Image 1 (cartoon, rainbow, N blue to C red):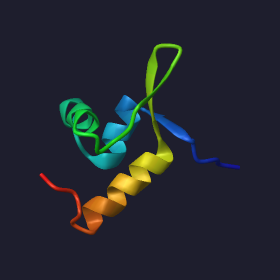
Image 2: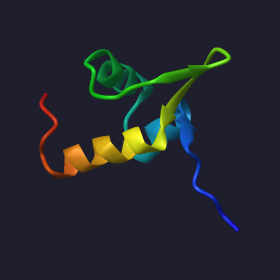
Image 3: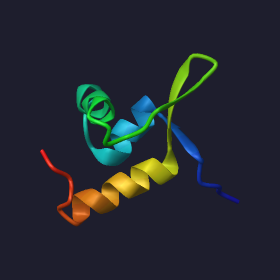
Image 4: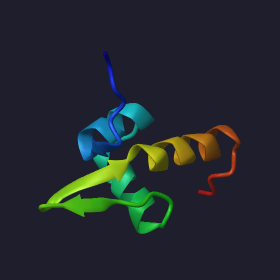
Amino acid sequence: MSTTPKFLSVTDACRVLGVGRTTLYKLNSLGKLKFSKLLGKTLIAASEIERLSTEIEAGELAQ
């Protein structure tokens, strides 16, 4: 049985979104993508990835 993770690492989030680390961190600094920290590790909620993907598909993500 496969379960979908609730949080992704920076590397996995980059892979899912098809962007590099610099772009991912820029999205965070612009307030477009929220990061969480757990014991010093940066994580991104899968729901944040889904929300951002929906915005991108709808053309709502401003440059």
